[in-house]
Image (tube, rainbow, N blue to C red; front, side):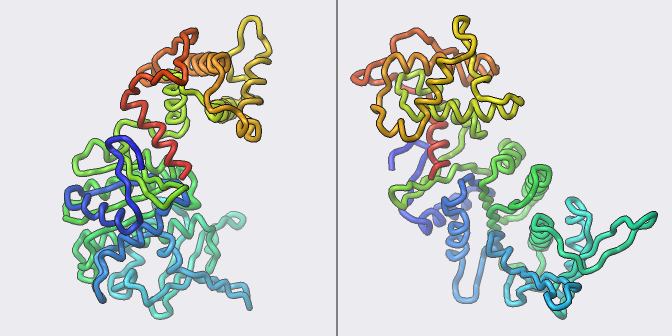
Length: 400
């Protein structure tokens, strides 16, 4: 699969998992971003499987399978004693009875939640309680059913407590050489997503052992917090993970200096298309999506309010109609690949006005010359710079 110089292709997930292990021979930490459906969870499983030999393991992992180690018993008969059952057969819970996990989990959980819990190591179950206001007094309510987000936070804190045991050299977890974390923040609000990312980054930076870590996520904010916390430290790699929809080929692209937020990456792709003149119908659709998100963020009712109006076109009728027509899915199927010069000039005008009106970083979005003659289909576009070419690849991988 073609791609930039810093992009690598892999025919399957096992080969990609082997590559990550090779990376971790040289580095301490790898952070991956990929959209749901790309294969993140399956990749974590393949990575773990490479470390299996008989009864031996080398990877402690957190993914969707980890969450499945906990199952609710909702006491359907009496609807009173609701508990979270623990799968006692998993190595994940090695030493549960001897290591006082309650006391190890509770300080971590207090960062995020206001409920308490008790682990019954004889019955392999967890019960939860919470203080509630009852008149003038606080009352403890036992055996409550916590929310899905609270459950995920509890399981995450359980996992972090085990990681701390690994870092402290606990005998029950001496087998752990790698930690693989896949999407630990499902069902969490943004505040907790930031808190989890910052806490995880601090643990990774403070770790003085030989432990190696992989984290994969589809959550842009979580990725950005980890990236910003760790990118100035040696021994860390950051990648976009993509998968070709036409063939089972996986790509791994170094993030480099690519801005990660999706709207900025998309704008960079549009800016490069306008600069080279290689403008296609789907670029109008991308511009409309960005305008719609901007209008929503700024409190406007319509996306056209974010499209600058010409002095002789006060209602923005022309640009509104162009975006409506040229971004329509069925219509675009029948459009020629290369846009007419007139439509390309309209596109460049709308894009230039948009990036100037909302003051995007001029280093990433230098002014466009709107009235210049776009190159024809026979003329090769000028060589794009590396910063701009990274964004199309990033946005392309997001659709995989």
